[in-house]
Length: 179
Image: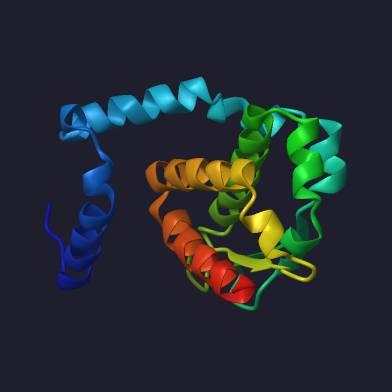
């Protein structure tokens, strides 16, 4: 494959970020592809859009979609600060919570794919607005929440790089807001 300088820079950055987290047995493209296919099967990603999330997630962990930005990117609002994190964690399983977030990411990817064949050019990103109103350091430092955030960060790292880059920035901003 022939890459230009920008693509080589992005590939190098990807390898630096992901490389230390990949086990030695998965250092080839084939092994990594097999692992990703198996991971998609284990999380039932291909059928996730049809999955009905528990009522507590649908009702108390809402994610809003007000529309599209001028460039065609989907805009999504996550009212993270007003979510009852402890209540949601006690009312559903960890797997359900992760599946709900994966379903959200899959819906976002569908919205992006729908805008690929535009005359103005393809949409390659989504805009996430995290509403941090009423967000507290107490929620962010609660051990089950921290563990789940780390787990979800790892999932994002292996499922799509762009989510990982946004996650680091968002977590950094959350930490700065709370301190």
